Length: 126
Image 1 (spheres, rainbow, N blue to C red):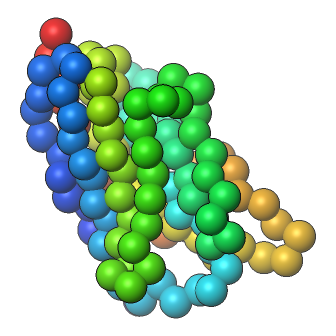
Image 2 (spheres, one colour; image 1 turned 180 degrees about the horizontal axis):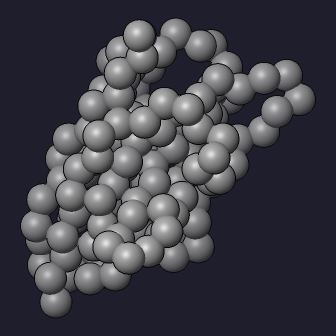
Image 3 (cartoon, rainbow, N blue to C red; image 1 turned 180 degrees about the vertical axis):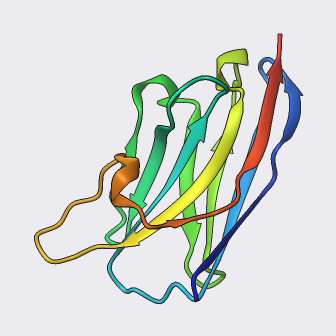
């Protein structure tokens, strides 16, 4: 049984930093996609960043240069370092994962992910 558990959310002022963590258990695929998504009230879920098992990384444009996705394979943990936070970054942040098939590629489309965490709230005040 796959479980993804996020932590690290909180409330910060504009310009501040937070680091989100996602502890994965039962996720044993050697080829995979892992990603961070966020959803603000009244808005659609948005892909923020992804990392593939081959180390390739993708960011959505609005977070490039401010957010960094990384993973610790030994700890089976995914991270999202968020710097220079803005009020528009306020949202519930979710960790997601899926197996990656041959000739498949990772993307920030939420429909492709079948494992999700419960979310952690990030609030940025101006």
